[in-house]
Image (cartoon, rainbow, N blue to C red):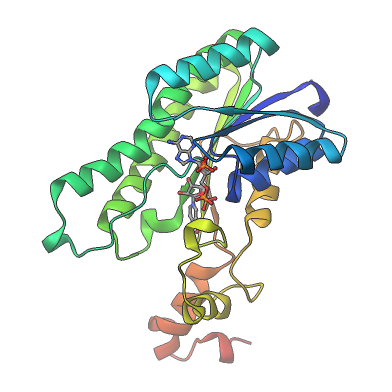
Length: 268
Ligand SMILES: NC(=O)c1ccc[n+]([C@@H]2O[C@H](COP(=O)([O-])OP(=O)(O)OC[C@H]3O[C@@H](n4cnc5c(N)ncnc54)[C@H](OP(=O)(O)O)[C@@H]3O)[C@@H](O)[C@H]2O)c1
């Protein structure tokens, strides 16, 4: 099936990485369902952007952590289009609590885990069932490198690690139906969710990134759309790290490599 006939559903596509991903799929000729929680203006703007480049899209509100709203969302898309070819589980459903574990209340920890996982659970279960009947499909989870980096939020790291394992388990079940499931684990990126970062933190990330800056939502959008492109038919069950080298450069600049004379400055 060519990109032009494909129906792509993206959760949390009104802003940030989801919006950038929606524009990319739109540019590739796919019909894009721009899901959002409450900011209808932002979602309408993404639809307009896609239409202005000759694509087609529609904005549909739904809280993806609510099973009933997910049913209505998926039923509506299937009734109108008869299929879903690509699902991108991207919605930023739960802000992490940044307090030391010693003073982290169970409720805050549980809320992060429940928000992160319910936001992918209902949507994946409903859409995977449709894709299994189609005998084809792509599911892409947007996770975080917080899964294996010390971020200062044990809840955030635990929740994203659970998401990565969840995605790999889903990929195993989906494989025999011709459905590929992959995860893009983003490092810190420039979106509303990180707008509180002070300049010194942006500089810190820039100095530890191959391209010298905090990645933009558009950088992630291009990667996610590539993984979902009909021509990308070579991987499933993978967690693709997208931190522009932050992990590697941090080890070189701050870790043991620097102390043993292998720092980036002396690298060659
Ligand atoms: N930004 C980063 O540094 C970073 C790093 C690693 C991973 N990520 C991951 O990337 C994804 C996107 O993050 P982002 O920074 O682009 O987020 P963002 O700019 O904060 O945008 C969040 C989007 O998610 C939607 N949303 C939130 N809760 C929702 C819900 N319950 N149901 C449906 N939609 C919901 C929002 O809708 P409204 O517009 O209606 O509010 C908005 O469109 C997230 O999964 C996040 O964990 C981000």
